[in-house]
Image (tube, rainbow, N blue to C red; front, side, top):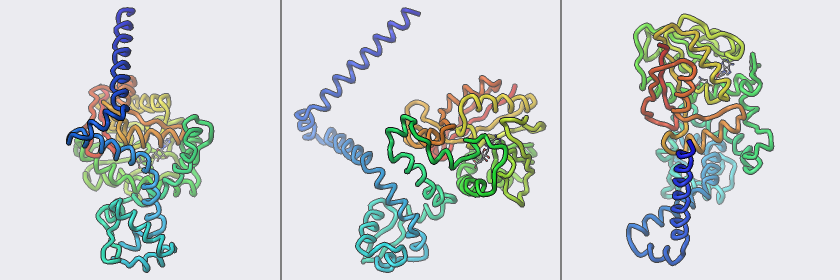
Length: 368
Ligand SMILES: C[S@@+](CC[C@H](N)C(=O)[O-])C[C@H]1O[C@@H](n2cnc3c(N)ncnc32)[C@H](O)[C@@H]1O
């Protein structure tokens, strides 16, 4: 053991020596000037410069995007091009400032500006067409407010607004009032479309499977699954009040904090459920799901995850910060989720290659 730790210390010391030497060279202005003379190294230097600029200005980009959504500018352009004056009139921002906004939107690929008219660009059209995207962008104002003082945010010194937005997690609520329900379930069910598509495309679904979607909310995933596989018998288990009316699936009200997971299902799914909760809650839930399944039963976990081999922008930057702001949540890597599954009795854990890791990563495991 002593031998292993001294090898580790030497390795760490070598690594930190290497980083120190490398950074000394990179910081040297004469070296920078010298490297700028060669095509490959000057390209690397320019890319690094652009990346630093992008890091510094990213907040401005999100606010431009937010203004296009919140002012209704994107919607107004949906049915055809407008002059700057016409758009200015519709969004209530004066002509000169609308022009500034439109040039910024042009640079971000949201609109195009030609012959003094503004057209919706491909990115703008996609934002309008992807279900839930406009609502997702809109609800980020809460996270932006929480991040206004990032130092105290990361020190955990103040209560976050996002932890209030998602009341069912924070309060371990047994039931929800209708205002809370409409506040989050609409956003969740609209944004479920892409998650459901990627999840269903990753896994095998056998005919006639009896399926339980734990934390299935308004049943958006259930609906997509039945559309694609009409023979599936699907039930949704969620806290009372979270389910929309007139659904074709069966709704089983209950809380996984206090109730047992219903019996009699071949597959149990947790779609965007685990990352709302701390490790102990997730462990308890997985244990309950494992106990509810018969031998051969399967669990599907699908949600955005951290990068496995190295951190990535969506998991480690965005979702990890978001779930941290929720206070009770935690974004995990595929191997962290796999470990929790194995610790709670599951085996044959399989992580599917993700089509769009910023939407979801899917993991399957079985009870042996
Ligand atoms: C982030 S939402 C995801 C909803 C849906 N699966 C989706 O992806 O759109 C988390 C869901 O877990 C449900 N949930 C939270 N705590 C719960 C509990 N204790 N028992 C059952 N469901 C719970 C919430 O009501 C909510 O519908």
